Length: 209
Image 1 (tube, rainbow, N blue to C red):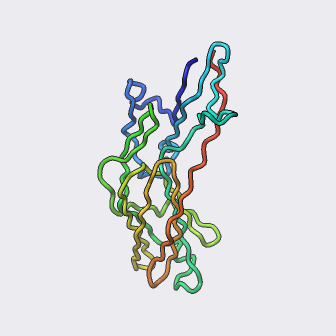
Image 2: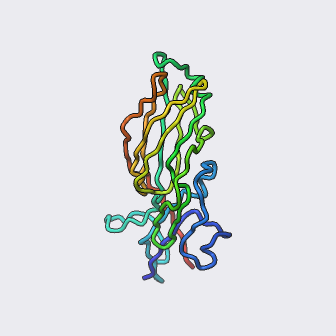
Image 3: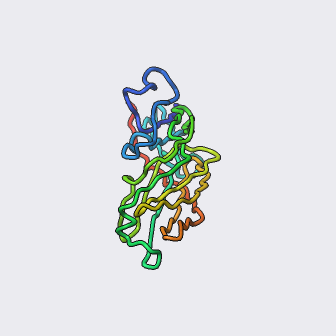
C-alpha cells in the first residue's frame, strides 16, 4: 500500500520544484490573487497495485478523512448602515476602508499542510477594492495566513471623517471569522465575531498507472 498527500495550488515556477518543502514567497496583501494563496492540503489517501485509484475523500466507515481542507484563515466583514445611522448606503459604499495589524508574509509546508504568518504586521492596509455591495451591505472576504495575537484596527473614512474599531480574531487555520460592522456617525459598532469551520474542498479520483 502506498500513502499519498497532496496540496493546492501548485506553481511550477515556485521553490517546491527545486526540492524545497516550504513555500515562502507568497504574500496575501493583494486579495485579487486569492487563488494563488488559498492553500489546501489532503493526506491519508491510499492505493495499491490491486486498487490503483487514489481517492482524496472521506472513507465510508469514517476512519480516514483524506479530503482537501483549507489551511489558511478567512476573515469576513459585513459592513452595513441604516436610515437612523446618519449615513446613506451610497456614502458608505463610497468610503475608504483599511485594516492594521495583519501579517501578510508567511509560509506553507507542502509536507504537513501547515500555513503560518511571518514577519511584521502591516499598518493601514486598504481593503476598499475588495468590498462588494448588495442590498446595502458591503461584504469583504479575506484569506490570510494563520497568526496568533492579532489585534486589528478597522478604519472607515466617510465624508472626510475617520471612524475606527478593534477586531481580535484568533486567526486559527481552517477557520472562518465573521464580523458585522455598523457604520454610524457616532462611531463604529462591531459585533462579537462568529466562528465556523471552513467548508472542505471536494475530492476527486486520480488514476495512477
